[in-house]
Image (cartoon, rainbow, N blue to C red; front, side):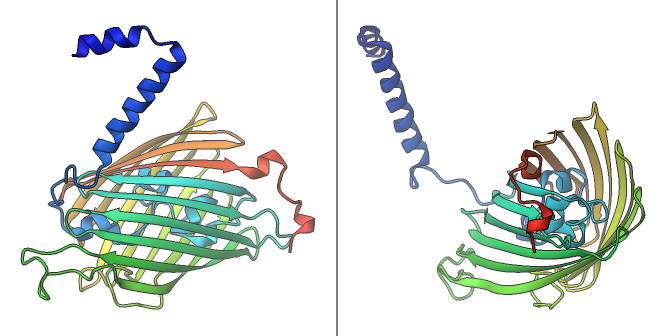
Amino acid sequence: MAESLRSDMRGLSPKALACVRASLLVCAAAIVLKPDAAHADPSDLPPEVGYNYGAIETPRVAAMNGALRAFANPTDSLFINPAGMPVTRVYHLGALAQVWPEASRQSYGAVIVDSVVSSARLAGGLGGTWTQQDPDGIDRTSTDLRFALAYPFSDQFFVGLGMRYLWLEQNGYGPLGRSIVSGGLDDENIVRGITFDAGVTVRPSPEFALAVVGTNLNNPDTSFQPTVLGGGVGFGTDVFTVEADVESDFTTWGSTTLRGMGGLEVLAGDFFPIRAGYRYDDGAKSHSISGGLGYIDRTFAAELGLRRVVSGDAVTAVVIGFTYHLEATQLTPSPGTGF
């Protein structure tokens, strides 16, 4: 039958042959993506490991294992320290994707940060991320929206405030199936609320920076939105950055736990950042290492970050991102026309 089909296809024109091949690909995709065709096994990891404290990470943050509060660039800053947005004058549009294979998690998001338009140098950022975790297990889905403003009181002192709106559903069932004891809440939000972040960055010199950041400061008292206080200190030049951060988590594990992290970044050949990092998580009792690569020029950046837990619950995170530098195209309004 296969030989007969090949013989019949030999007589087709190139355009018709292309149509046949496209139809076969569509059919194959429909079979693969059919909802009841196959299901994966639930993740064996504790849900909190794959949830990663509700953090949204860019490739640079993941590659440096979170050690980036002091030297975050504007798009990183929306997610890790809003005070970093006005440090440089940019208008960046970005997209990111995260895949956690062992945790059966995937996240997709977009971000926009502007510190160019305002004549007062007020910077603003907006981002949104959709996440699905372990659809054949706990079946957790969330939407994370963020908005932040930051102001440079001087070239050495920056303050930022952020707001998050989180919708989260968990529709999975435990070993007793649809029961009050172990069932989920069908299509109902178990978390839906606003939290607030704040950050301060101090740069006594262009090469040296310190930062203090608080997340979920209104204390929603849930591990889905843990209250965390952290800080970082770093040293950086045009070709390398090194930073160490620490944060205290007051919510996730029922008592205060610490996370310590360090990261290194080197710019090779003016366009290729190479990154590495390490993190110890006292709550999860885990050690992880990370790394990443990228390409950056005046108008565009493409980056990849990887993290792997090497001691503790083994999990891998893969983060990719793309950023378009709109200010380099001269399409943005001049600062004099801003607010």
